[in-house]
Length: 336
Image (tube, rainbow, N blue to C red; front, side, top):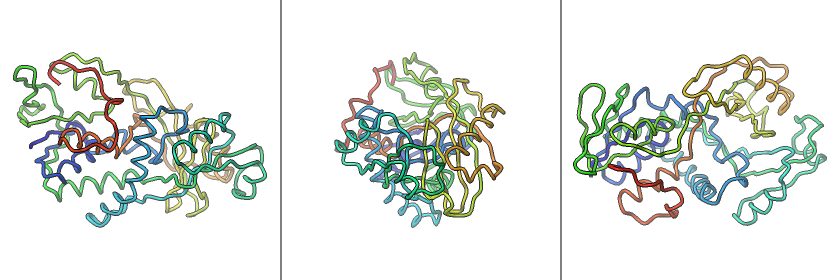
């Protein structure tokens, strides 16, 4: 089977890898540069934020992803020599007003979640400010260094013979009856395949509308982030409150995010967001008050992986599925 994947973010790369490992001939088309949109810009927390506030289908994808990531990171390191730096540092959520819901969700889904008092917080995390009243500690939550993950995935694909095109936008679809048989790219090339997979993130709706109507309810949402530099280990875990978080990397870099802005496809940064994120960083980890951010960027917010990629590949190849696919299906569209 030949498969053309449109979109070279983490979803496109992981889907391509799953299919290539299953023996498919895979071609990947990316309108810009591989992994340089939402996948590069995110923080790499291997969990939804406040996971108990999501529906059961989201929990199912997240649980599989959390179980798969350690093996995936090891495999990629062994294949490519690039360490994606998966770090099971744990996640501490401060002053969540629905802690009982969190405990019920954890018990129902088999996740370790501990409730800490203000005294526990000061004893366990002395770097925190004293004003926090309570915390929810999830010790198994990891973060992955997404730029390194993307580099490792791309190298793995090339080693497996996947044909990867950058700066090549799909402009049209060619049909045979109701079935798509080819994608036409901006350079005039025709890319034929047995199946086509759209992994365009916020651009997926536009892709589906080229040659067909689509009711896919996708829109771009901007997220801005800051980066600091501390001594390695100075921030021991992910700390989160009021929708903002700080994430430690192995080398001492600390990411702070993220805004949530309805600004279309505009990925520019703003002074307002810079000041707001800086205030959040200092509130979450006071040691950052003495530091100046070393980087500020914006991107369009990412999606779940790698469970989504595995589920998609399982359906395409008609393999047994680990997760019920029905909750994620969209209404059928002519030609897709």
